[in-house]
Image (cartoon, rainbow, N blue to C red; front, side, top):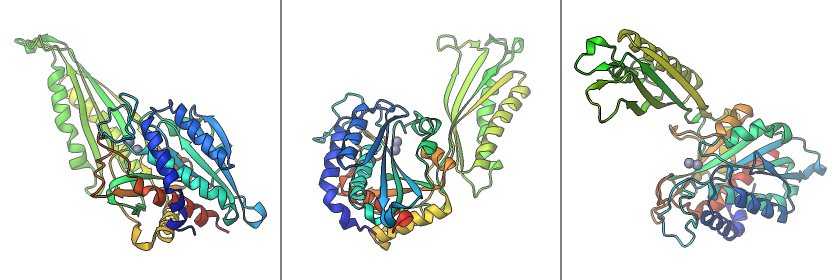
Length: 396
Ligand SMILES: [Zn+2]
Ligand SMILES: [Zn+2]
């Protein structure tokens, strides 16, 4: 197994890449400079490169030579490359030079770690048999990068028996790896219900039907789904984020139409099904009570990210072996954010881990915060974990 020390020689290079990427953040499907840097560094390490997968995606392929190169198993290691449409305020010497663009989720760190792992793997091909596909994915931040790669036949063109990814987590102590046994992140869906009544004068409600009152009753009833219909040991979230009706200059008019929009989150497919079914049924039911019409629309965006047990156990073992047992955890409470790696885990077995970047001396802030800056001290641990997974899966 590679130790953390084996990756330390790459720390300086990984830090330079990470800061360079941080200075030049690019939004999803626009990662042209990032993809060029990735392809250049992979080629420089003698790694076969395929570019233009789902636009700006890059795949590096390394074949192990152990056993005469006869290994026919393959795994995928995935890093996301995109930044966010935010204005950075860190004041770091490597702060973003692109106004309104920022690496506020640490994907610059993920890309640098997978590039660092690539260097070690390319130089140690004799330590594993089989194939490693390094998947540099575009557009993780709500732009459908994983889905686009899968739609372009990612796993048909680059077949894998298992796929792995990690994400930095400032709330976890630096260098710690946590691999949840099951649910890691929630499904992330949007929904809307349009209530249509018969608009009327605010002074003469009896001459119309009140879509506002129906929408109000709907919003209150909506919060009974999680409180009363969901098993208390399960998790789900329904939130209203947008409410639109009438005109601010016409408070004496009962409008004919009300639009309610929100998000729904679940950690399992059955809970997701329940939320979808009940949002629609409560919308139609409250509309019927108030004599108006309801039109519910539920849009499935991302499934829950759920680790496969065997691959989660393997990833935890790899973390314990490469980083030390004290740095490896096999649990972490699920988080109700979403992640498009969920789609890859629906397509192939695999696992997703949290990499701790927390350090009181490095107040990086939380993801999607304008003060966020990936903690470079975590780069060797992340790269070592990727290499450890390769040896655990394909080791000679
Ligand atoms: Zn993010
Ligand atoms: Zn992220």
